[in-house]
View 1 (spheres, rainbow, N blue to C red):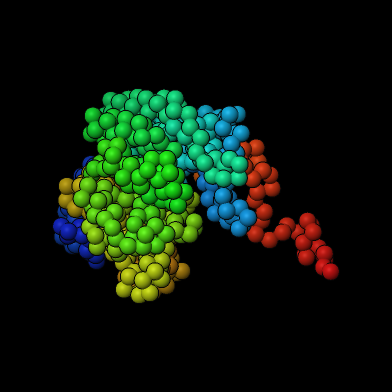
View 2 (spheres, rainbow, N blue to C red):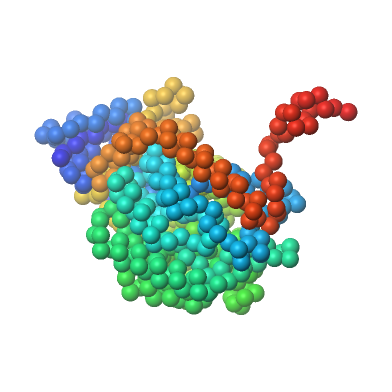
Length: 494
């Protein structure tokens, strides 16, 4: 099947980065790009045409911390000063823990999340979920079900169940980590089973990877065993690390070294490692505020980080700084890590934060952020066929409609998209030459049912906190009091 896609703006690869092609055309031959150039020079012998008109056609967006869960950020990013410990398991829940969701509900949650990724222009994803709603972590069987759905939907997934040896809790009024090393060993065995099963499927859209949980919840032995299993299989490892004060303090206290040194000691520091969020390095004022070699260590090892600018901002923590990391030569990819899976809003947030941090408009590196969402993700995945519109590359594409009157006059398609739009303006998501989403619709998907099921599942998740969390009940007051509950709106004035 030969499909010709035309658009007023095409973000084409020029051999080093991206370049805007006005009135451009892209020819798709089965699952590969066969031509990129001006519309007037496009081949005529095609089977199908996609006329996108006033749109921006760009490489498919790569989300390496993609939420595949019902998001809890709406609940735990508004903590009052008295709740500085935020939402955590109570210590006694450790011994009576259970799944909040049934296996069927967990499957439906992941289906809904993948639909949301497609609706927001994500073509390649690496999943993230919150283990606090589970009895422990994720399972191979849960992920095999998600892999089946992902390939039916048509997204490109880099998949593996999470696993851990410990869990963050609040114990005697202080944050701590409680461990069950048997759970960690069983989780890695399950992750290996999943990897080898998915590898045997030989599906080009599904790549098995290892996705252990946060570094402070993993024993040194489990980290080393993960490194061995991944090395034997040539697999990628994504490890959440370098992301907070507690993580750093806990590891220093328990192991006598920094998180980065622990990663190195256990054999994980190499070019197959991907680290979300990479914020707490020595250059961060909350760590040292000076460069003592952390960035160089990551660069020399070939590590990639996953920057999640929107989620980081919501939790009050950002890279110090995006420009400094890029100038050091560190490969940066992007992730959403929360709902909505909107990399356009993430880019806007990252660019704006960088300007504030550096007190300079020149620090708003929009091109750098777009590269991170495309080429940076491809480098992290060791997939030079992704993240670019070039002959021979995989036909993974995303288009954003620019014709809405709310965009105003178009000056530069990317600036307009980031300043006036969002990923909700995606009008086409294509993976390996197959259209996954067109104009907000996905074949065979009932979006009304997605909406209704999302609300029901969220309500179940929310109710689970009252039973499990160290803060007890009454956790989520509204922004303003509800009318009729003693508010001024009821005339309750003194």
